[in-house]
Image (cartoon, rainbow, N blue to C red; front, side, top):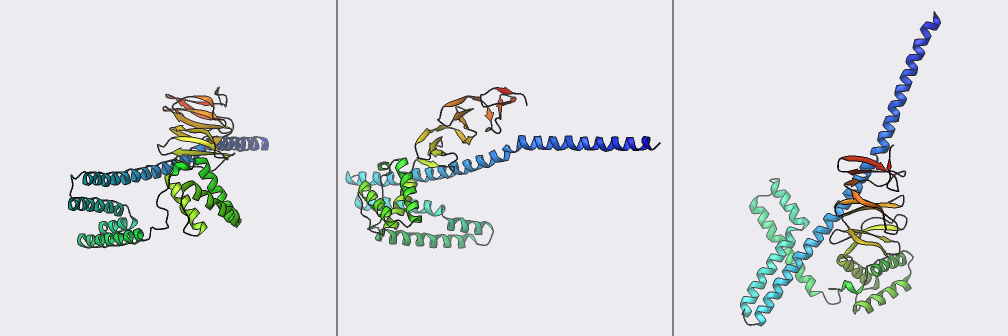
Length: 321
């Protein structure tokens, strides 16, 4: 009698334990499969932000060049006698006003004023008054800057320093700065003076930082990831991706539409709208034939061809897991 009572209880508890175990297993399996999704989203989000910054910088450079081209056109017309001096001055003022207006609309102060107007805190008239004040402040600042240009770095030919030499110079400077090595810092100052044919008017550290800052803005290639196993991801101004080693030599020149950091010796890349994988020497390890793919984890990657989703190993072979 007791046996008949206990046995169903044991069976019920064992069944519940099995169900709990199965549920836990499925949860862990799902976690392992989908864990890479948020990681990949974060990486894609980072790259997207970098690309947006690069697009914004590129757009500003184009706009800056357009204003310079217009001014040069005016000078050319004036030199040929097509524009009188008064006409030249009038047209130049219009271009400069337009340039100032463009810079102001991109400023934080302008966005703050715009926000206050949209929230109803500033009336249209008050907004216009504050905008005029902002223009006056900007013009005053520009005038002061132009009066103190002597001794300041105004233009550098960034092509005189290669990507590798620029990155090495940064590395050397900040290491010397942290170690308070004035001899190396002084040597770098002389190096920059010789390359760019300029004389340091400011103190040495300020001069070097000005040079590095301007060169950073002019660099066609940016490092967009930390070094991992001595390899980092880079992106050029056309938003193509490549890889460099810790000595700043290119493993692969920027050419990929999309790329991720190396995982387990392989990196996910996309070219001509197809995904595949390269090794740490830049060679194609798994052909670029996939419509979508993920980085490798525990020797396995998720890929898709058309509507078919499969798993592959690091040799590119299908795995049934």
